[in-house]
Image (cartoon, rainbow, N blue to C red; front, side):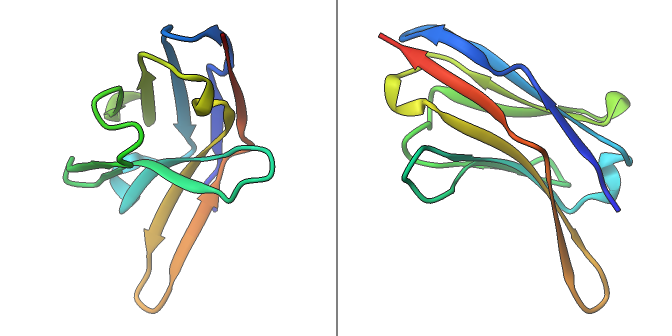
Length: 119
């Protein structure tokens, strides 16, 4: 079992910045991928950014150039730096970890942290 604890959400003005943190209960070397998803009210959950164990990253087009996913392996923590925030970035942000076993994939989720961008 992998536990993920998120922090860093809050209220920020449009154009501002926020950094989310996701602390994992296991070494992130053990996790094949980690990522951030978000879900706005009435909307489907969408992938925001992912980082694979080797360090490669991918981003949703809507956040590319504004958001950066990174990690600190010594702290078992993944970050999402969010710059130039827009009102449409308002959502609950969820940390995700995926662990691939011999015959199945396991997904783990944080509790979610609210990000509200106000104009």
